[in-house]
Image (cartoon, rainbow, N blue to C red; front, side):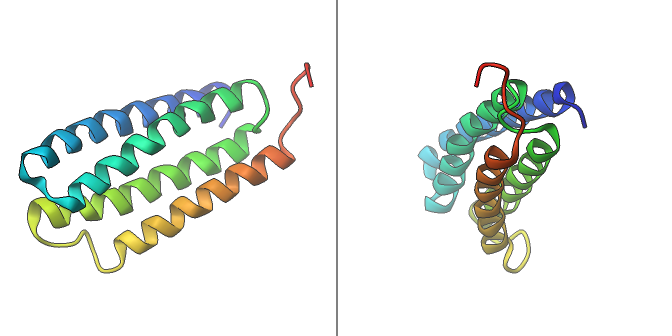
Length: 127
């Protein structure tokens, strides 16, 4: 994926995480439980990170390939972690066994991949 596509996908993922986080927060405030509130927090905490990722890719502080890896890890981690907590809160059952820990671990890997991408990424013309 190129800079343009990866950046746009990061913006879309960030916007969706933000929207889902607000929806989950609203539902949690009306008796959705602690699990749904935590899922909402994770979505809302990572929404700006995904938007920032688009900017980092655009200014070449993170290369498009590294950015795509980070994007996939963030999206997968959020889907597993927040999805599992939301399923527990709303349907009374997990997404699947160990989904939340797997999602949390994936989010940790995403942050590590972001750091690694910053170390190995292309340098911007100004720096």
